[in-house]
Length: 150
Image 1 (cartoon, rainbow, N blue to C red):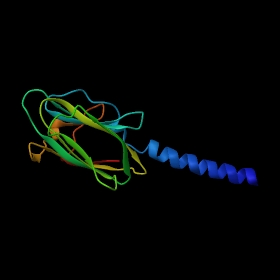
Image 2: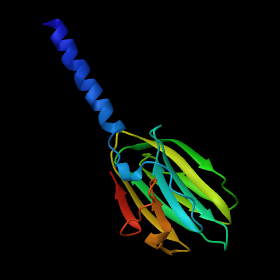
Image 3: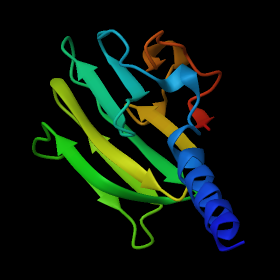
Image 4: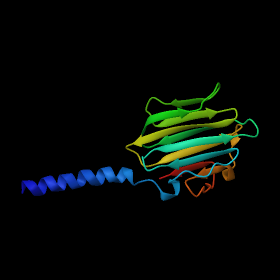
């Protein structure tokens, strides 16, 4: 009887862990091709999310808010210059970012205890055109600049 109880407990524990590891849509898996003046979002097999802006022609300002029903951790800023920032709120469930200048800027992060990510993306102070937002290996475009990944 004790073995059955331990096995049941272990099974529940493993199912709980696998639920967060496999919760993200296949559409967000894999890095999209690099596109000029764009924002890319993807998830990798290390269970890490990436947000990158590419800007080589003209200077633009990419900004936005990313929210989760869990908590952000392992946040790593990439290639930030003067005027760029990544800010995480006290509850660690909201990230605000601003990337300026030319080149590639971005951030990487992981999520603990959540299964949704909501984005609100802007370019030059306006809603970003969805044909400039690339998600996952196939580079699909969301219907709106405010979108959710599950």
